[in-house]
Length: 240
Image (tube, rainbow, N blue to C red; front, side, top):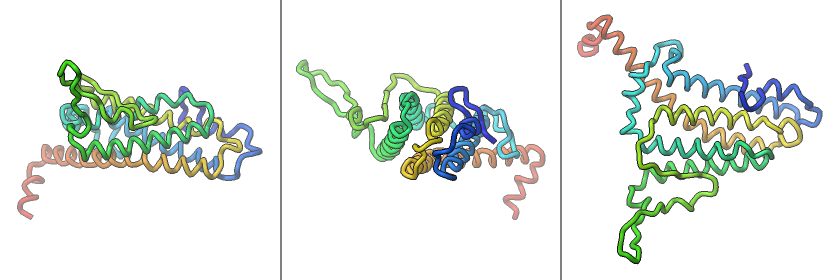
């Protein structure tokens, strides 16, 4: 089932246009991929809002999520997600599909590299101290010129993880919808589609990570509810 976007046309409305020059089957597969990914993204967003039962098991509350994702412990990921969402937003107005998918691929590659570097390096490797002529010390971001598309902002205050995640999820959905714009014709080629799959693979890593965390949270919440209903359930774990 296609999911309408307030900005971009739905897969159904786009595919219903002229397809005479379209490569047989390739655009339909692209449309199906976009529809499935957006549906997953929106489902994860609802779960983070406490508006749906996680795979029909248990409603994850705001309290559950706040405990799972405290802002103080999520600073690194929050900053990474903010950088990704901000960077994706800057390329959504690219009208040429080929230019867009190349920019998207570059952003995802740079984001993956940044996330990996961020997990391995300490702050002293990210920032370097420079002495001015007045012999004052100040910090310069040594990563600021490493990327062509990825924007790495720095904040003097703590960002809210869940709000940042909502923004990223919404931007990711629009980034997927954008893949269908102007690609129903000759631009929906095998090289274009291969770049789409490359980007999709990197997006799926984010989705898989969050999904796994929500699975753990749901299991813990179910266990807590069972313990409230029957304390013997908890005791039986130690007697078996």
